Length: 340
Length: 176
Image 1 (cartoon, rainbow over the protein chains, first blue to last red):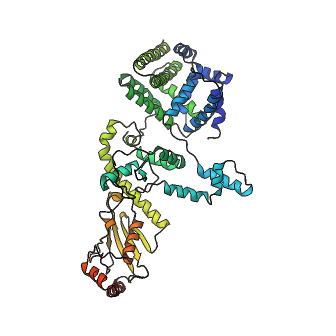
Image 2: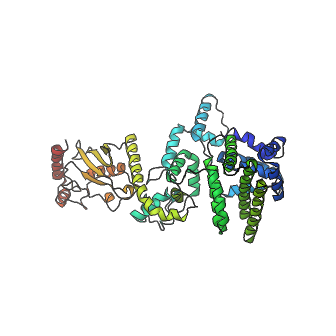
Image 3: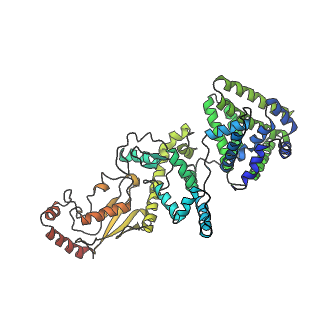
């Protein structure tokens, strides 16, 4: 999956106005929507990106980011590029980390190493020198597991004495067994306010993606309600207009987007997008009986949300309310036009 | 929504409010999980001269054996121990009781041990493997200064040969 995607995605992003993509735009958006979008100042590129947002899996993001960093360094900065702003924004937000399959890589390397001593990178060299890759992985697992739950550390927190445990485990230990390090019995000054050791946590997520996912799933078993991403999306949008606190609204949106991304992780990306779009259209179609325009309206809502996020991140204070009012007006215009 | 509260920064207030009831249910499954992990670890890499396994279906009730270490009066004896895990296990120590009678200043007639790590010095980072190793260590080095049977401790300090003789006699009688 990781190998196939980058071939397609950089093209899309490098040449947004190529024939193929303009065809795509024609397929995806009705002319009326496009005219509205033009009024709102959304260029085709932005539309495509907005329609692709849903299928942004972490793998994809990573490959895109790599490519983009190359692009940015080679081309002069251009301030109007929306996708660049998006890229910057994304790099600031805490994105889920793409899993790294060490096992597979190591196996491949060890196979190579037997026949021809080709070593591509220094990093790989050390792995080749390792006696047994699986043994190395076991050692890492042992090293990165929490002494309290004996599992891989989940959101590890490090004590002042340098020992790391799951944040939850450490907190329970401090509550129930006194504020001493479970490993060395040194006093933990503030067992309550433990923070996650981000470097360690990211490392663990990279090395043991399966375990982390399982743990997350176990933790959020009740969280995942059966409602579809589209439905929750529209519902959220509705609530958002009522919510006055911009921070809360932004947070809800972030959650929303994260959920949209998460629920779609795992399948082939192109199919996902098609599915998503068709579902987007069909759900709205069922509600009201005007086919093309309703899909547009839903997309407009999403665009509005996107735009709002950007506005919120970029500016502060009164600009937000202004931008929000503006966008709401645009979206309602789009919907109304669709109806007439 | 409930589960999401714990792991993400975007936890809602409802998750925090309902957290109290939820934690109690997870702690049992957490200790269950931890005990299962210990079990698989014990099977994979058992400590020398020790064994431990759940007694029947109850994961919280184990039976352990320790073989008397060589060079001690307990050499060759097989000592059975009962281990009961509390429901909030890694945070509270397991209850370890000798089922086999032993002549030792740190083990009373009912089989209760005076081992600091099983009482106030318990740490959630300790495992059954470590506990068994610690018990095996007091076979070789009894602690006569914190005894449960002061008579045995006194004899140990005053006349170690006599103490060892009685201990070996008890071992032959109860632990063979």
